[in-house]
Length: 92
Image (cartoon, rainbow, N blue to C red; front, top):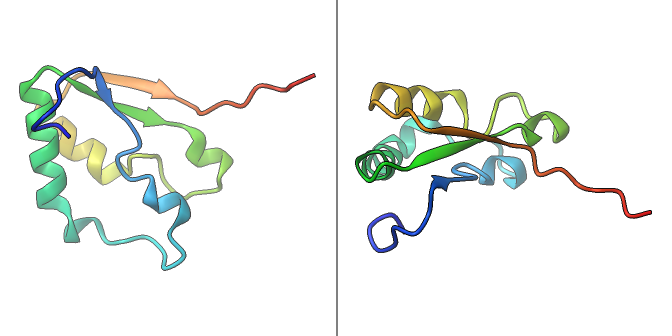
């Protein structure tokens, strides 16, 4: 997506699979290089990433994206962060 489309401001749900994968958490190191390439492109295009706090509601042990992705983003000089929560409104 980041190679062919630039009409976005932030990347969200970078590791959403962590929420649903019945096999457990896929090791970050197994896909670090791919994630780094995505983040490098987003950073060079002036884009950011979303930190989604719904991980607390789902009982995950880490944020989304995980701490390793956030640290990688920082180490690559990423500076644009937004906060999301996937809040549900009551319908009453």
